[in-house]
Length: 113
Length: 113
Image 1 (cartoon, rainbow over the protein chains, first blue to last red):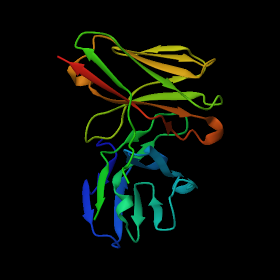
Image 2 (image 1 turned 90 degrees about the vertical axis):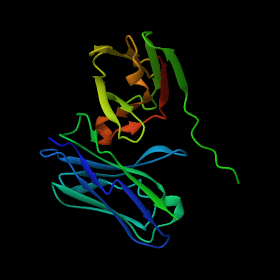
Image 3 (image 1 turned 180 degrees about the vertical axis):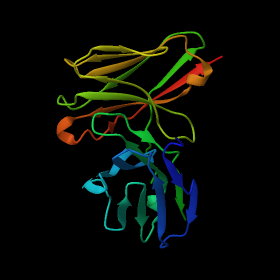
Image 4 (image 1 turned 30 degrees about the vertical axis):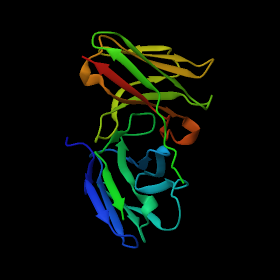
């Protein structure tokens, strides 16, 4: 298996632009997470899906952030409009089920200028 | 103003020494714990896990110890190698919390040849 696949690996955008990050979880995994990593705050959970349904989105910073999981093999995290403080590395992770380990993608490094 | 980043605890060891990385977790109801290794520019990678019905688990060159009384985990790496240099995170998971991995601040391990 190729593991969790994220795209793009790097994204540089101007403030105010829309940004879409993509994730393909490992086949057969039914849970998906989006995390954000910064030097200031470490690894923070943004949203958790189980069987394609958002279960916990309490970590989504504000209405500018939205996430979807239209099917078991694809998820997006959208920021609109983007701001410089959104600059971070965004990770997607998936797992087979509750009580099992989560596998992480390589991350998307987002820079908003 | 000046930004204050996460100042990660750092452990420096010589190649061949044993390393012990410690982690204090916050929720006494957590019952599943995972250690991850994160190399520069990569996503966190699963190393070993342990459930609360155990107090020790061994893998290849790694051992995890769990002390539920004081809410403490440790990761022991035997015969540390330069390739072990990375940031190590512990993640706690709780059944009542949908087993969403909650990450600690991490420890930077530096192995000197």
